[in-house]
Amino acid sequence: MKKQLILAVALLVTVFSFGQKKEIKALEKAVKNNNYAEAKALVGQLESMESAMDSKLKNKYNLAAAKAYFANGANTTADLEKVSKYLEYFDENETPLVEDFKRTIENDLITKANDFYTAKQYGKAALAFENLYNVNKTEENYLYYAASSALNDQDMDGALKYYLKLNDLGYTGVETQYFAINKASGQEEIFNKATRDSYVKIGTHISPGERTTESKAGEITKNIALIYAGKGEDDKALAAMKKAREANPEDSNLIVTEANLQYKLGNTEKYQELISLALQRDPNNADLLYNLAVLSNDSGDKVKAKEYYLKSLKLNPENTNTLTNLAALVLSEEQSIIDQMNGLGTSAADNRKYDELKDKRTNLYKEAIPYLEKVLAINPENPDVKSTLASIYSAIGEDAKAKALRD
Image 1: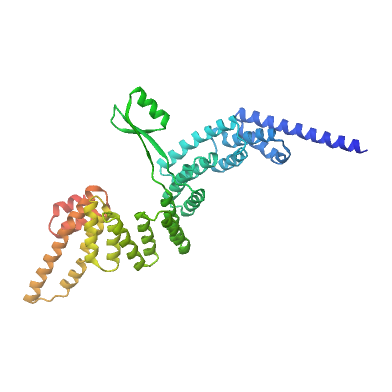
Image 2: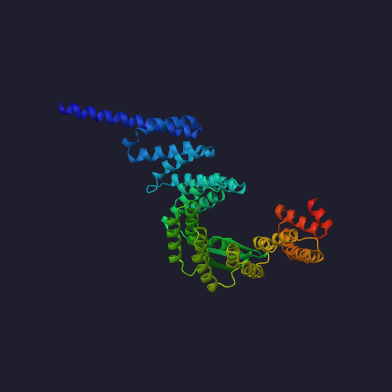
């Protein structure tokens, strides 16, 4: 009796295994014939059998299932998530066939991700880069590009997810770049080491060299802190910034970032302390001086604000934000002059005072004009600056210039 029972169970297992093989062979055939709808249906039928498959059948099943949902590139985001799930099986059990298939997916997704990014479809680009990382987790750069794309898409929750993952991975983005000068163009070009050496050897390139790129760890932690701050999660924001500063104590940019964070949280005293510290370490930093000018202006110290703006502008004459803010700071005195003019009477003394105030107002305009003209020279299509400048030209009698701007 026992022998019959054992025989019956053994026979059942054999029949079940034969059924699996038959279904997997049908799945592989459907994939080979590009019949992906049928292939996906067969994947669904085989899912319940997976736990009973031996390792060889599991290899066949997971690879064929991944190919079914990849559909030779004609897939959706949901399909790609399934592709990644099936490929996870091979993380520690990879075969040459799987490696080849992963390269095919990478090439397809890199093209799509770059096309999305170029077209400013940043949300789609972020998902494409995330799927690239899921396919090849040795390339953590893909996750960094996903975070950058999400940030450009204003998807703060998505960007935070990617940045936190990068933080957990200890990602720095530091890599060695191999470069040489193209003799024909005179331009520097970057290659992998073998290609660079090959070009130098055949003589098309000269002056080979190598350098290490800067770490992105500080930027990542900074963005984590700023996203938390934007979400109102101040404790998490400050904790992230503290971690970044501890890892990079000499980084002036991180000091400025924490200062900005403290300012957003209303801690102006801490902001001033940090900006002063950063300025001591890096006195020729135009961004630092710009930030000091903004704070001084917001706190009502317009004299100090103007001093900082001018210093910043001397270091970076092309900064349109500095130019625009400096013009706005100069013009902010206009309303006070107008109020005084409107409050005057009709006496001779009042008329003289009116003329003095009118000249003072004109001088304000003349002081602001060069800054605004410089902004338009850099960005000719800035509508707000064009409108303001046209109004100023009209006020001082430069009607032809005003008309040219309005036209």
